[in-house]
Image 1 (cartoon, rainbow, N blue to C red):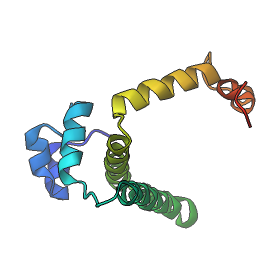
Image 2: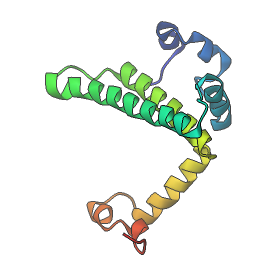
Image 3: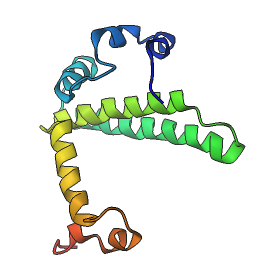
Amino acid sequence: MKLTREHFSTLGDFSLYEMGYAHGASCSAYATFVESRFKTFPSDLESLLHAGIGISGEAGELLDCLKKSWVYGKPIDDLNLHEELGDLLFYITALADLIGTDLGQLMRDNMAKLEKRYPSGYTDADALRRADKMGEPK
């Protein structure tokens, strides 16, 4: 589902659309935006906890949206899923910044790991074998 200007207007985020953050934003532009909106705390641990708890809370909200469809037979609310994914991205971006990395590096590292795990695309056998973890201490 592609979101339009009307969706952002409805969500009260029209200014994001206008500023170009909503469509085609680069990882670095988004990271700068997140840094300007993320509350940090006096200690690194507190800031890390804030981001981690934010991720957990938003993941719970996303799961609740899916649960309503699975348990109660309601249609999936695509707009709510989109919003919750954005909230997750916000906290993931903040956490990445706190540990000195960025979304681009996270994506590259994750792709390298998953290319090793699934050399020809996903299979259950490759998922169970976990080739990317072979040779690592348990």
